[in-house]
Image 1 (cartoon, rainbow, N blue to C red):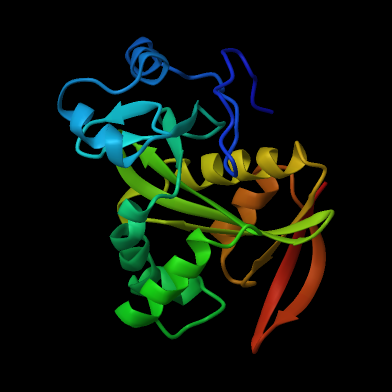
Image 2: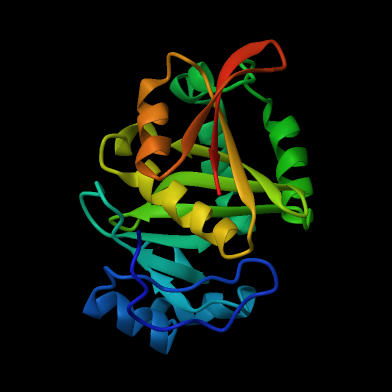
Length: 222
């Protein structure tokens, strides 16, 4: 369980969230007082920005947390157009595709179209997870029904084994739980790292399933 110990930000239209434990003094100053210095010029492009991050600029930070197994606190912010390249590089990473249920990597044009649709789809919710102020993971919820959602997570190869994926799943799952959604995850049977991650986050193995042409293990939470 994550412990809510600090304060709640003004909710955004889609990505409203709360702040959890693990917020450092410096991070609290950035998120509560807003962007300063070099980020000031960026604030006009991000009217909902709540914080300033090194090398990234002004973004709306929705959560700073230290989930179990994470080796350092992580910062979560709602996906913005500036994350397009990071998400594309994740999508074409061979190690990500190897565990994806869609083996063929997208072209840049295909991904650009998907990303644009994602940003304007009110049934999809996504966040980028930062580890030591670097983009490390992407987690997404697809709201499939009034009481159900599907979770997807991808971790950059340089940040695996640090608890980043677990933190991402914890955050997205809590977001769904606060809305009384059941969350489902489909994992390849040989993806033991992800199977352990979902179990750590409180998911229960439902059993084998089929998604497209892939055999999967289905996990559920809630």
